Length: 148
Image (cartoon, rainbow, N blue to C red):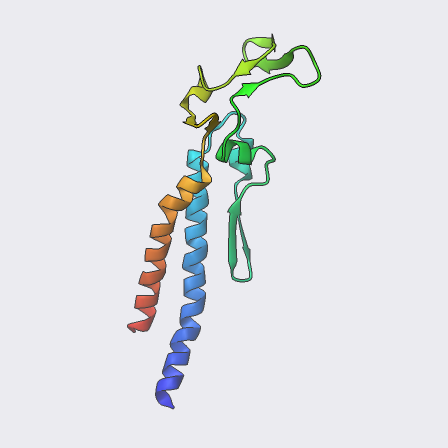
């Protein structure tokens, strides 16, 4: 009976510590993603969040254009209902164009070109970089608690 009580006590100590390491790892992944995300206005970077609920951890963003940055989009932009595109460039002013091709010059030239799309993934690379450290932190926590 004594051995069961000891194991139960260790498990009761282990669960909150593992959860704490898990949440810390999630915040680390979000920090990495914020460092990788392309920044123009800063809205996408500021929208990256970590949400805890029950035994889940969600890392993401609620900005509507985030999937186009992460997964990619067609580099050619054409007007849909007008004869020309109209957009404003800081320091230059209003620009009118019948077609815009991204990925040739400027900031967008640094984006990854995959097939016919351009993308700048930030969440997947953050997860790939952060998960091994998260797993190691959880393993270390388990070893520390169980070896006491």
